[in-house]
Image (tube, rainbow, N blue to C red):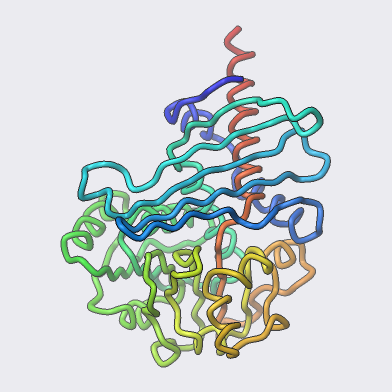
Length: 321
């Protein structure tokens, strides 16, 4: 069994068509061609943090994957990264261990950002006036960066709780070629933007239905546990198209789970992202629609990116011999 470092993993990702690969994973999931058990989860209160264990396989593939990823958001005060973790790859036919991808949660961040780009590809307005971002962390950056090639827009409107972090976000994104407007409230973000990304650890809604003009798309990816929430239920109730990366997962966690418990939506209102990609369910068909993608993170994303990285690393080894 081989162990690969973060630097090796980053090098192997160069040139890999992740959007295509992860779209194939979502399709396999929605078509019932994968086995993905419920998420394993540890939630810590003092200090706050969570650990997710996601695992599964796509039928007929060579490998299965077990992913462990953590997020401890007060780590910044200690001068250490907030995320950590690894992906473990095994042969599907024999159970033999193949490799440890010691990615320090980087691959989880990448596949999450790629899922946001996929959601935008099918659900965002054709003409994106500005990309709205609620949050200032790693995903608040990566979700925007991975929209390149999917959305033709470099204007960003951002809101965050801490002025220092907002300033840092603005400066970082300007150096990457974006024009960044700092907003005084989440509602101002929604007013200025028609593609809105929520990327926080909030446990109370940051946006209400009254804040939302027509023609908006939301990629809600911060709420990935039972406790987290970013959107008030009226937004999902107003949505013309409500998309889950995994209906079974979103029934248990994320924005959809809150709204189901409150009774403002029903399961019949939800379609799955893989079925939008493969054309079984429609995507956005009007610029005036409100669309919401609730992304809780599905193991097929981990399977696809881990397999792609390992394959690239093995090819590098063969070429170097």
